[in-house]
Image 1 (cartoon, rainbow, N blue to C red):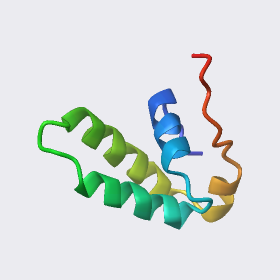
Image 2: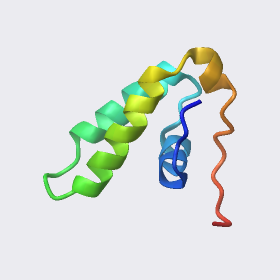
Image 3: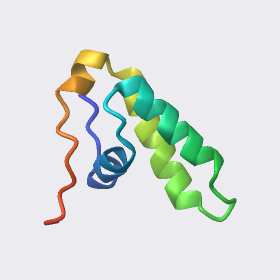
Length: 71
């Protein structure tokens, strides 16, 4: 289900709106604000968006979107 990386999970936690579609919208909006030099964040966002779009709302509800500051 998703197989999100640590970095992707942190990105999801930051932009989480409480719903899968809301999170997709928030990430898409943020992506539009990135400068051309921010390629790493753009690639990370694209990867996370692809995984979010491929999953169901039920799968999204099972995600624990709490930042893990211990890693």
